[in-house]
Image 1 (cartoon, rainbow, N blue to C red):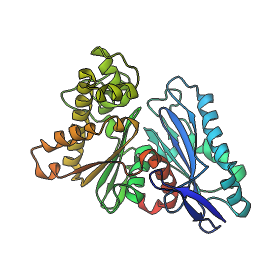
Image 2: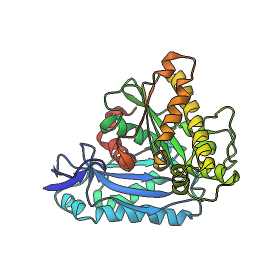
Image 3: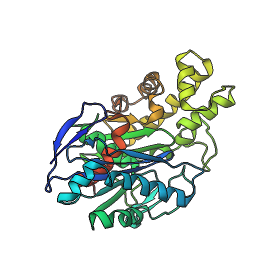
Image 4: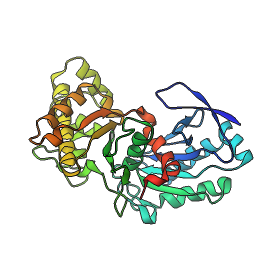
Length: 336
């Protein structure tokens, strides 16, 4: 059979799907939304299979489970998935989830979703797909790991052996690929750069650490700082518009966030000798000037091997987390 698929940043193409070359079911669970789609072995999202539902700080556990079930059900009921399942099954299921996680047990505790603490997301997904797919592999990693895998596979870090992927959105996450392989750590939380401390800046006390990068520089926390300085907007989109209009508070907020991110990247590069950092997530797109601030901050480091790191936007736009979740199945050889 032939189905249509695409990366978000390239035109749709026709993908020849066979029983021996099936897509994976990808699930990305974050602080604002949960998304699911089919992802091909070439790292493209199959058109017509991408669905999302809300998550968030106010959601109940039952509501979150319902959202996960809804997006998975919508994917499996899509015409593309039904055509594939008539001939066989999918390659497996990959789950990227905001951290921290306990990978061995399949448990997740996304910080910006308080209703889930040590929640058995992997088992939930396995139970949801078993009646339709059978006992296919179901793999769980932190979302930063999935994002980094996607960038290394088909995004901005292709061909780079030592890289970090980052997302700046509702939260700040990250993942690492070192010497050509994913570095995930014994619990699955390696690369969680949003929760390292940044010297000289203080953020919001939402999870007990006002000095962490996420508390200072995530989208909501950047807006909260700006509001404390007199800014009247409520969302990251409001801050981006005000920045473009020359609002001095919005400009100070972006400068502050870029400085914090740059300091964190410089520290990570000093530790790991990174070649490249690819940054995605909705708030990373607030203004291209954010990258200028980040690069300028890193350029001030005293070590040349830190200053050499390249800092680039994601090559996959908003599709990166889903492509990376699919990559947990298709590119499992990159994982420990």
